Image 1: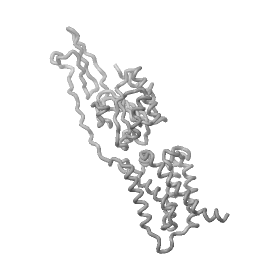
Image 2 (image 1 turned 90 degrees about the vertical axis):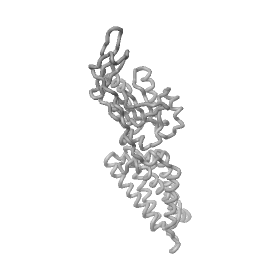
Image 3 (image 1 turned 180 degrees about the vertical axis):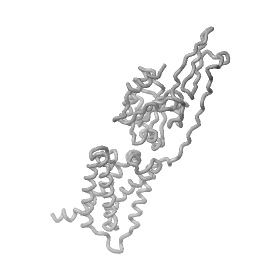
Image 4 (image 1 turned 60 degrees about the horizontal axis):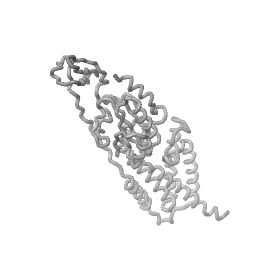
Length: 365
């Protein structure tokens, strides 16, 4: 019994250290999920989320190390850790009041071990109790031997390693591309001046046009529904898919935001491939997030599709396209740059293939 009591503080220190180390590692794989959580909570925007995410993970790593040494252990390390956990508990309390105690993943252990806000709250309270026990049963190094530089070095080294092993693209402002509006040919233009057998004339201001078909000695004019006024969409800057130039804001397009290893994304792509063969769907393009890109060939093999794609190395930009607090898979139906229908996630706004076909075919001639 005396032996257990003697070694109990060390055992508790190891347990607390393991908890913080597990939390840091879990948040790092994948780190973009933690960045997105910070943005979704409204704590920070995408420009600074990568920085904050790495600094927080570095802090947890530093605590995991600092709790095992004795420099300012009782007078700084333990009190600061308790205050940090109390702050997390306050945040979880707000989340439980607003969204429910059992809804969602708090992100304490990233995607590795999903925890509800209530479970995370209980875990933090237990950790605080262990830290209070440590505060009463451990001592700092002897007076004069404490070196605060050890604590600072531990944190700065952890932060350096996080930024070194998890590099990211700095936030940059994207210029809105210039859109070229096609020449408008009026209804009064003579057919002789056209010198064509068939031409589609687009009036982007009214969303209507005339298809002129020359048949032997007669000319037939058919009014077309050219859709809404042409605009510049948030997808306009992406104009190269599988090595070919594409204007996503020209006519009808289906633009998908997928993660190569995402099972739900694969299910959506598989359904789109089936619908594409069965119905006259617009061209389909995929914007892949730069995560597990080695799985892209497997993605197309499993879904039996070969849609043109582009890999987005800028993960924050990927989620900006997806939408605020949105999750994959994302599927957007565009007409002249106007998003007429958008699907995202696997809940209320999840992809509905039959609905999409109905929307598309309802305005086809």
